[in-house]
Length: 481
Ligand SMILES: [Zn+2]
Image 1 (tube, rainbow, N blue to C red):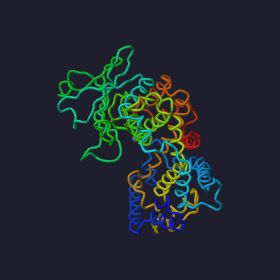
Image 2: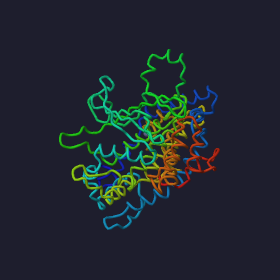
Image 3: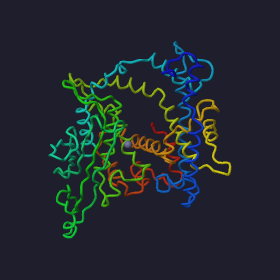
Image 4: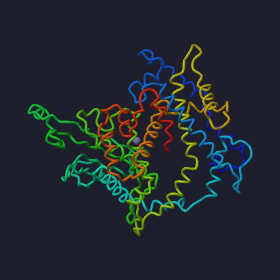
């Protein structure tokens, strides 16, 4: 709030600095973690932890990741600078003289947005058009258009679900004129006491796999009779069961649950994972659906975020929950314009975090130990939008350096690939069955059973995406992330 609203630049600077500094103890803990991981990697025969962690990923090598992040940074920097120039203006819209410092960005962006306020910002105006029921129907319509599958609500039996609010959807696919059940989704969408708060998730309860029917295997598996199966092409498959959890508000007595556009995007994202699981058709369970390389797994879900922001898709379903009137698209455009005000700045800060992750886990750690302050400073000097600040050693506050450990680039990579898939395959007609079939046969169907780059080459029709330069090419592709 201070960064957005304090008029004095010095106040903003002090508050910004206070949030960008790590304690000595935090810094030492980070450096010890990175040093121990470096030692582990060397024991395992790798040169550094990044090389060790990337060997089974789509990226394969630290050089490939560096090439990707560097090309993405070079493409994003001028766009981010343009955004800063746009917001660094006075009430009359004239450019403010002098350089912008990092602690000034939020302030000028807030001022800029204040001058361009639209109806879309009025609390729940957009939400009135996005009741949960309408959005779920919309997803079913969309999947029916592009994949020929639809959702059917099914009543649940006594001990089938873990809470009375959980709803079951069977996923039916058109198989040459007859409908076939290809999967089951349990939707646990509402917040409640005792439920893990925060982010939405896709959980695989039972993978898909091929069942080889022999008398012996049926006799050995006491549960065989209860496993939902599917016959396809003379083979038998166990169909997947997943749970999809969110934390949406519980509907009121006279009002359905209304989603914000952001929550709608979250539901689309998770349904992207769900379709990966539903449409994956592999013989082995350990490569079914989402069980693929972790830097490839977000592609189907991030792609869905492009669908939800497309007017042709929103127009399929978004209706006012009381009047039934369709969503006015000019409001969506206003909303998007505001959301996008510092979009490239946000991308660039993600790129910097991913670069920090790579630089720390590829650093040569000599007798003097690792100096993470220096790594962070040097990175900001080389790629940052603002003059670097020596006292700001925020690196030890980035918890992802622990959880991701040399793979924080993954989400950016999948965003870049999804943007290219959207642009080259779906943007002309996001409801095209041919485009859906292409994505299904080149990507979704394989789960983790095909080299990810082969999937990407197949769906994009880009034979040049090979070898160590493939990632840099994706980073430079210029698709709108
Ligand atoms: Zn995801």
